[in-house]
Length: 271
Image (tube, rainbow, N blue to C red; front, top):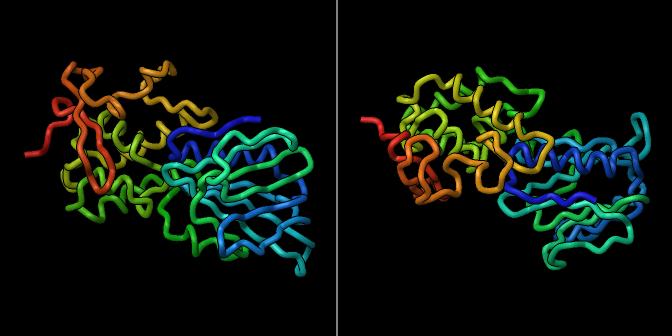
């Protein structure tokens, strides 16, 4: 069965939702093990898996029991953050991962889904999902995608550095550090440029969507068009390597608790 790894950004989460969809949706859970104290007594055996969805970087596995007005509808919520992953195995297959990092186990007759180091694990009524994801901005890979609204939200904080604004999931949901760095390089914008000085915000959010859509359905994330291991990014993870555009060394620095990569020559500071 497939293994899920990589940088957990919007496309990785979308792919993970599809992985769980193929393995679980339409099946009845035969056993569950949610290894966080608040959910230690929760047993979802007997629930049918109705849908595997995502919103930004949040995974939403919806399960049902019964039908009509008396039926119960619950959502198993998880977040991958920087180090989480869901993997799917055949029933007798050995799990490949540290046992102490297992946070969730969901079993159906033909497969077992295991959540390694997943975060914010919760089981809530499906009708209450908005209290976990209602704060998010338009989802770059979701049916609610609205580029004008995303640009409006980013522009609502004109003094904020654009690198921070792009990572704020309340502005638009799905961009992580890799796409932030690559997007700003492609637009020739310094990560520390105030939003008010960024030209063409609509064009920037449109490119952000194109980057994520290009990687939807595959685990290798590439912004360059190449799937070769050392050629997938322009600046991300390439400190001191020559810029693919101008040859200057790529730099790296901290920004808002994240590491930012950029080309000082291609992305000069404003002013």
